[in-house]
Length: 173
Image 1 (tube, rainbow, N blue to C red):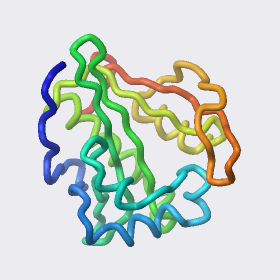
Image 2: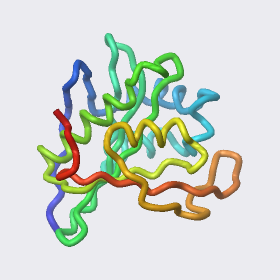
Image 3: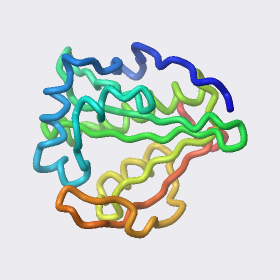
Image 4: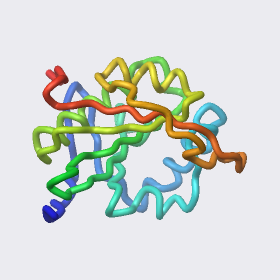
C-alpha cells in the first residue's frame, strides 16, 4: 500500500478557493447540509466526524470569503486499486452558478496532478438527476447502479449511480 500523503491546506484554481475545513467551519457546513434542497441527498451524522475526518478530507468552497459549500475526497492508495472518490454539496443560495462543477474540476485536477490518481469516482443518489448531469458535465461517466446502496435521511435504502472518470479521458484545463 502506498503511504498516504497529508492533504493540502488550500487548493486554488478557476477563480475558486478550496481550503481544508476546520472546527470553525462545522456550523456553516452543517447548516448547508440541513437545507431542504441539499438534505435529501446527504445523510448527515456527526458534523465533526463528517467534515474533520482525516480519511475523507473536507474542503470549504469559499466565494468572496463566504462558505458556499464543501467538496470532500477519499483515497484508496493500494497500488493495484488506486483511486479517489469525491463528494460535493453547495448551499442553495449558490445553486445555478456552476459552483459545484467548478469545485469538482479544481479538486479533480488536484487529485490527478498533485496526488497521482488516474481514476476518480462519485456515487450520487440515482434520483438526484441534477447532480448526475453536473457530474457528467465535468467528465464522469455512468458505470452502473448500486442497488440499495445508501440509507437516506428518511431511513429508507435507495439506489445510487456509480460514476467514474479516467485521467486519460479528461480535459481539466
